[in-house]
Length: 131
Image 1 (spheres, helix red, strand yellow):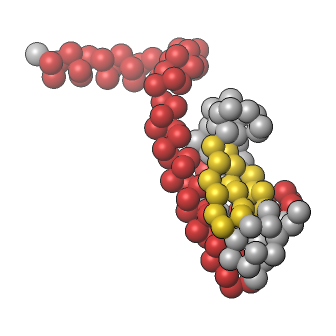
Image 2 (cartoon, one colour; image 1 turned 135 degrees about the vertical axis):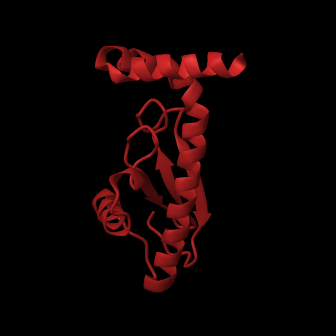
Image 3 (tube, helix red, strand yellow; image 1 turned 90 degrees about the vertical axis):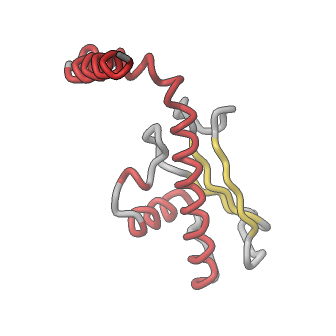
């Protein structure tokens, strides 16, 4: 019985996602349920970017500086656009300090500098960063 109910729900969901008008409503209403998964996926992706940045700094002695240079680095390193963006579709940012660097996601609201931002940090290998 439970299998039939689940199958019926999946068919209804599929039908709802098929039509653009209902798809938009379904996605918007399910967003709070999806955010924890999106946060986890984004955190995993940010950790991978941090590791690649550590390797980059270790081999080249420097990190990409400025938004344009980091964007170029992301474009070269990750050919798939989805690998350069968080789960909500916003490109990652890099902040480089004297002792650490940070990869930042704008989070669910898509705006940087708010409480929804996700930030992952790493200590600098060289200790020579930008103020």
